[in-house]
Image: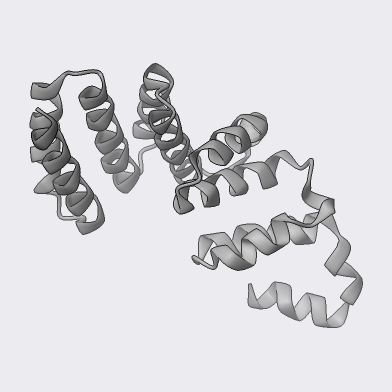
Amino acid sequence: LGALQLALSENPRLETNPQFLGMRVAASAMIGRLGDAEADLQRPQLSADPSAKLWQGYIAAARGDWGLARTAFVEGRDVLTAYTPHWQARFLNASALADLQAGQLDTASRQAQRAAQSGDDTAKLYARLVMARVAAAKGQTDDAVTALTALTKSRYEPVAVRAELALVEVQFAA
């Protein structure tokens, strides 16, 4: 992000360049500056950019705006393979969550399965979490409880905590 700011200070016209704005969106989102990324996504230069749509979907999912996330991921899906396997998996898991929230369980399961194939251990954990939640939504309570219980023991705390919460929700609903 610093290199982009330096380039902008040397050439202010970059502020309207779609490629520059797209790189700034990605850099901002990657370091968790979602508000900055969202501000750039509002720029008209990115309104039809499919790569920007992936970032919009990712940010919308992080914010819990599942409808916007689903729409944006659909609009950006054709450029997914332009990203590293790590980011493909992150986009796929976020898309799977959006599909899960919309009740599109088979689509959510397919997206999570694709994410699990990325080779990224963290992405695999998140994909297993999504698949367990899909199982719960399909009424496969025993499978969901087994998978979620295993995930609560994960060394990766963000997944373990989310799995614990999902496990409580599943057990409460049963």
